[in-house]
Every structure is written in C-alpha cells, then in structure tokens.
Image (tube, rainbow, N blue to C red; front, side):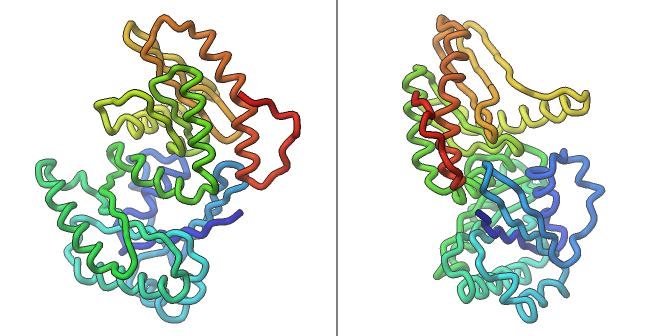
Length: 313
C-alpha cells in the first residue's frame, strides 16, 4: 500500500535535513554536509509493515519549481495523499514563497483535490524564544487565509529541538496515513486499562515517531512524547555505533516506573506506571501477552493474512 507524500519548499528551507533526520537516522549536526536537492529525490520508506511512504523531496531552486507547475505538473501533483510545504521562517522572499505555495495548491486542487496540506514554519530556533509564538501565529493566520478553499495545518519546527518529533507534526502526518488507526488506538486504550497504566505509547520501530497513545492520567509536560522520541532514537543510534541492538529498557524510582520494549515487528511500546508497587515482572508479562493481539491488528492494517489462532488480550 503506497501513499504519495510531496515535500516542497524553497531551496534552503530545510526539507532534506528534516527528511534525513526522521527517515535516515541522521543527527542534526550531520545535515550540514547535505547538498541541495536536484529536481526530485524519490524514496520509499516502509512504515508499519506494508504501508510504504512514497516520499517526493522536490528541489526548491527556481528552475525546478517552475518546471513542477508546467512540464511536470501532472506527474508531480497526481495521486498525492499529503502535501508538506516547508517555509524558512527567516526567508527574505516571503511573497515569492507564498506565490510558489499557492501555485502548489492550485496544482493540488486540479490533480489531487482530496490531499491533506501541512505547512511547517521551519528553523524556529533562529527566532528569539519570546517572539516565536507571535511570529508563528501571524504566519499561520496568513497561510490559512491564502490556502482557501483548502485547509492547511501549520506547525513550528526545528531540527535542533524536539519539535521535529512533536506528536502534532511529523507523527500527526504519518498517523493520518495509517488506515483504521482508530482500531489501534482503541486496543491501546484497553491495554492501558488492563495494566492500570498512566500512559501507553506506541512508537514506529525505525523512526520512533509516536503513532498511537492512550493517556489515562493527565501530565503537565505537553512535550513529553517528542522528548522521549528524540532521546530514545539518539540512544538507539549510540547502540548501533557499538554494534549493539536496542531491545528494551526500564526506568524506575519511588514515583513511577517506565518500560520501553520491542513490541510487534514494526513497533516499540512504552508503558508508564505511577504505582511503583506493581512488580516489573507483571508488567513485562502483560506486554508479552499483548504482542500477538497487536501483531494481528498490524497485519490487518497491512492487508496480510491473519492466523485464526491469534490470541486476544
């Protein structure tokens, strides 16, 4: 099952850097050696087994942008599921950026009217922290106005902090492409109830993006998911450099216990418990027993045959 995703924006806006961090295991400082994208770079990212993201990273140089809207128009904009347009927040050619963005929307309306549109206001780390909300809100209002009659969803991002993994940004975009994701979330909620867990998170195995979660008790840190994604992915990379493979970890103190464990062939699970009296062994047994059920859901999502003996949790 292929889903076509267009990644567009002016040259130097940061498209390839964020793509390389999310999907190719780069760290932020290593993206400095990436060159400019020439025309269109195609990549097929296998995600959750049978779901393949057909990612088109479109070069942002003026000559390429003009070709996308003329000679390559039908090829580039046909059968698009998601358009992700990246804006450099410090661009000095805002009107030209907007012109190209609106040209993209016109082509989307003509060739893929059902596509979802996301705008990333990127390189927000370059803006003083006390001005970020004001600048983002202003850009968001302008983009939503110029996007009509289509709807766009805007996010502020940077490769230098956790915003790239934010549950409402790339995780949200990928979440949108997963068929029947509500069934997965429903099962995750039931699993959290069985465990008496505060929270249960499901991460995609390769990217460590959050694809589903269940929250039973509120938490004050709204950025905790993306922080965890970023930290664990960096730890996984450190393990691979030592030719070791990350499998699981447990963190426990007098206030909580957190478990991250390999779950299905394409996911990791994280379980947060505020009751430290629950033995680790009991939680790990429940995680192990739930694997078959979630593997069954995963196979259904992928359109693969499901064994009739798959147990239920």
